[in-house]
Length: 285
Ligand code: FPP
Image (cartoon, rainbow, N blue to C red):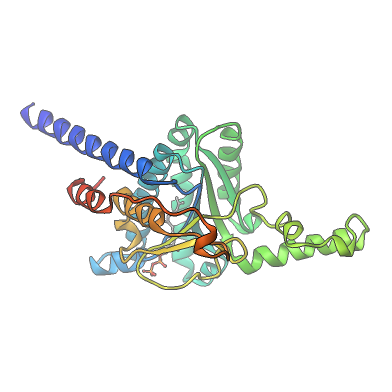
């Protein structure tokens, strides 16, 4: 009984600290409208612990849950997660099938909670390449959450940036060939409307975990002006406090979009030191 009370008090304290961190972030500048994440390092996280790679992917689902929840709470509008790349099909067959099972069970387990939290689920990629049961479960979840008004969670599955550009060019070619589009109408803006991301703004912030300095064929077109944040943590260790740090750093950046500093508004001073102290004090969620 006493132990239960201690646990409850500890949780309340952590929730209070979390709220304080969130309020500080909200006061510190703009929250990125769209965050894209390359979730890397699951295998290495598991290897370091002498566990099979799938254990890293399983723990990675807990990070997904925490990051999705935190993004919804602080008002991020779009979150794109690179969950399975076109190149990932070349991994050993048993890892691919375990990842597909994990995706299926995560969709089943999380569906109702996501729906209750007003999350709108979307998917980009060559979805037809996924096992039929994964496709069915996902399409059902997407349909269920179609009218939700909270965070839009976009899963990139069997996705690669080059695949996206190639499929866009193919469709555009058909429209030009059939005369629906005139050749001189083809602009960057028009091509953007054929990409799988046509309904979403470009990411403001790209986060990659595990310290790797690569884009790995993710949203090649869409990342043109995104701010990059590389975290040294493996994905299963990347939780909301790490995300807050990434957003806090994003808020210090000056996004120039090709202009000069002088053409932009001067940045307002922000309490970085105070935020760092807050982060140190927050418990892991
Ligand atoms: C990269 O780590 C991670 C993946 C290829 C899969 C990510 C999948 C999940 C986190 C689980 C399912 C996702 C959702 C959205 C429910 P890696 O295997 O490349 O790690 P390594 O570089 O250390 O080998």
